[in-house]
Length: 338
Image (cartoon, rainbow, N blue to C red; front, side, top):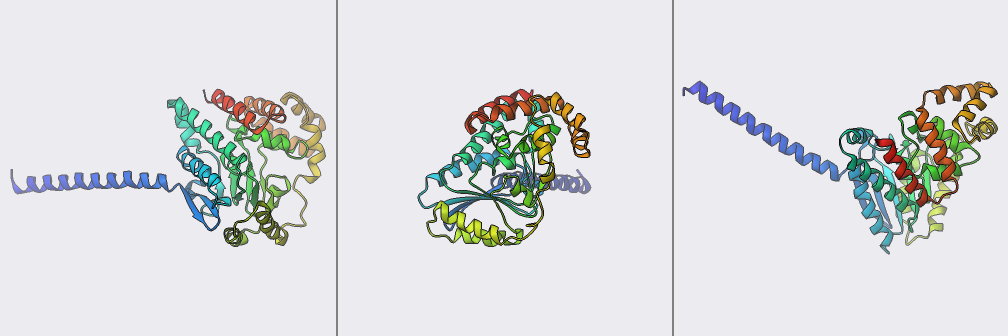
């Protein structure tokens, strides 16, 4: 073997070695990233959960659920932890929903993943709803689907002018789950039915006015609010509420603007009060106003099956407990997957 051949062989060996080292690093970083998709910290008097996938708008996956749930349970039992704060990294989203890619991949290949994901997500949502410690969610930025499940069942939900809430599931062949069957029919009038069927987006202070958030705070004050909460000494639920109320009262952004759906609430209450999707569609057609026709256009783009499931889910859920709703939604989720 001549010198050029030996040289080539060495180069190929080095390149193989390099590739292996790079792959090893990637595997390690993937493993590290998995652990850092959620940051769980004890700070001051609180346990702080930070959803840490800003590039993916903090979309929720099974790994994140499995990190949050046991820690939430530990903090709930810990006498030194007086409240739990959950927030999203990156400023654009609290949590844009469940990781759809993981779901669609699993839908085709692995039924167990979809069973585990929905079961464990709903178990976490239920734990938030029954949490014995005050639970404060900063729903700053995009908050949809799975992000709603991580926030809306908690005691305190803080919106900002950059909040964007929606439950867009009827457009993708699903239904507004994560306890949507519980909280949506309990919003004012038929607002929840309207939001669920049309996927209508609420922004800023309207997230508070609709009853999704309990408080509204200027986004630039969010860091200060968090610091004030963390600095409390052995706070009661009332102490925490007082701090949130003070920030809410000081916020002037869009204070004088009416709720975006205010002028349409009478129509929403009458048009969306039917027990069948067909009747709602007929109501919208007969009404004929520009608002009704706009909603008709939106509903016609949705999955017809999803619309029917969603309406039934909300009607049934209106008289169920949160836990009963999760049992119902788990069964529905599995039926929708296959």
